[in-house]
Image 1 (cartoon, rainbow, N blue to C red):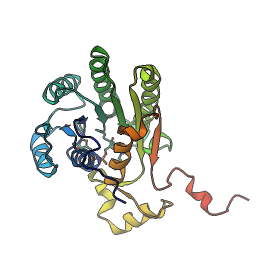
Image 2: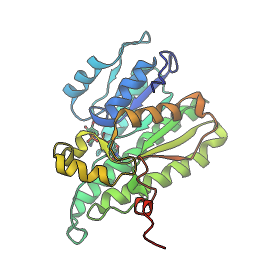
Image 3: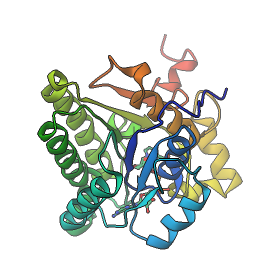
Image 4: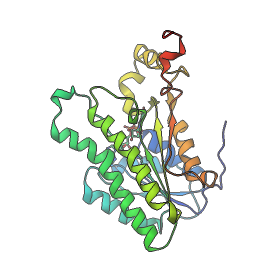
Length: 266
Ligand code: NAD
């Protein structure tokens, strides 16, 4: 079902981190298709230029290229500052950049752990801080969205930093939502299941592995990036005007204890 409307976000400014591919890119395209002017962040400027060519043009001005490394606090601050200046404001902040690293937990390297936490958690705090300061200083309302994961809830062995980081952003969503609800600032998140994006190249192009992943999902298939973009648009829209502090699991039923589909326990 296509629920898009060319006008839902007309006149709105949106910033998306980690937007060069996967969920971030699909979300940037979806917001642009509904009239928003979007600032797109990732490390590589050339990939952002390529993405911009695929985004619907809007009257408010060109979509903004905002290169920067979300692992580096100075880059995050610069991306926020420059994007707000280029967009002339901000209505929706989407903290989507995320990385994972597989390693047995007894072999975790501190630098690697800190790197995952910097991209997946600290950048969320720094981006949110800048947006909240801007909205409060100008007495404006806005909304923050965070891309978490089913691994906020489901432990992911050998991905300790990733699991921990998604647990942290779940708490950040709730804490910020409570702190800023009285100011009309909403904070929510989506927690995707297994989605077909470059992050999952390891199994997407291997039919056996793809089937194994699909077999673990009650709906019998992984999700598409646009199926995460759509809930993000909903949560950013006026349709979600009374929703704050929520994490929407978008996972084809992955968090429903799928083993209980068959009655093995009684
Ligand atoms: P992806 O690897 O396809 O894309 C990640 C994006 O983040 C890319 O644009 C990449 O360039 C960017 N990025 C990575 N490190 C960065 C950095 N240091 N600075 C700036 N940008 C950086 O991944 P995806 O599947 O689109 O994931 C997007 C978000 O969704 C992540 O937070 C991820 O944890 C989450 N997620 C994905 C899945 C899935 O199955 N794909 C499931 C659950 C949660």
